[in-house]
Length: 425
Image (cartoon, rainbow, N blue to C red; front, side, top):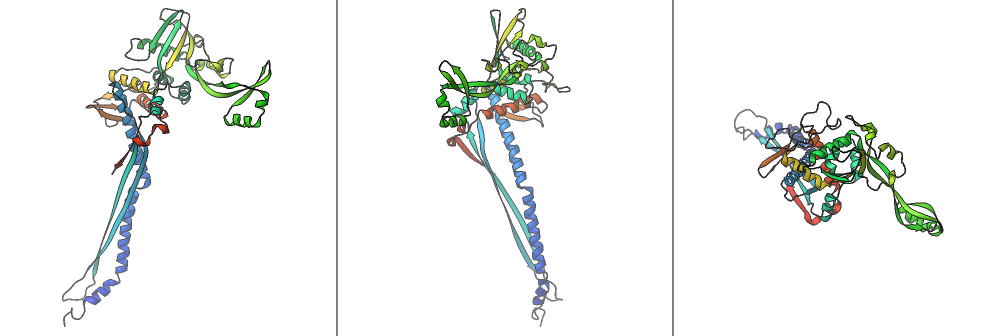
């Protein structure tokens, strides 16, 4: 009887069988480590970080693309990422392959081979809103408010940079002479505007917040003002009642106190030989002190300074500022891109010591000169436009513009019918 007839296979498997549980546990551990390793390399933190970086790049490229479009006076196209969804699956398999020896010879333990593999798949889909609603374009074309400018000044952004973006034109009136200075490199008055702005900055031109009262409706009688229901409605609306003495007795005027902003001269900000006395008003110190009439200024974009409206004239000059809209700022930056005009920043807060030449310019966009460390880069009609990382003032402008565009976007500006769902694998 040969070894096969004696059942050498049985004992051989039986001997190897004592190792089977350990092999199974080992294979299971290998599979678990493989799956865990795949999951760790693609965990939630990693996915969110990559998605966030991708969204940043998409939004920056879209904004630069619209600036370049504005340079060519072609229609702009705005989109908004509404929702981003991510999903993923992790799978694996485990196999055990026995190896049994047949034939003559001494009994041998059977051996078992194991196989393990793990797979992971991820996909991302997002809803892209097309911003073409009436509400969005109205917001984009609405002139920026003095309160917005004041908020950005208080945030610490350089005043020179903000005024270049914010001001569309300045109208100077002095001794019967009126002169309009346009903040546009393509306008012949642009050099004079630049000089006027630098003069005002040297005199400490800034902004200040003041309380402003707004009256609502006619005065109420004492009987109506004491009605509990009326008092509740007034309180819900955030209004106040101010007593006023009239020929018919005491009346109560409904009003609200709202924060407002005005342009004024701050003596602590004078520089470059500027004299605070040359800035006639309003003074920011007077505004802060709540001087009579300061809270009821009719025009927050007007101020008075010493000197005439022309180079060789004297006296005082009334300056009225006209503000840009967010859309105007995009077209202004588009013109700077197209013309290559170098608007140099000169104030200390706009160009700190040691800053590079690119950092000292208001807005820099290179054409067909890409670099590995560009802040953002796009291709439009065969030309590559890029913003170098060294152009820190440009990046500040870019960051601010993204915020202003976002302020022009409301929930009503994201219609469901204009939403495109895209799946990226």
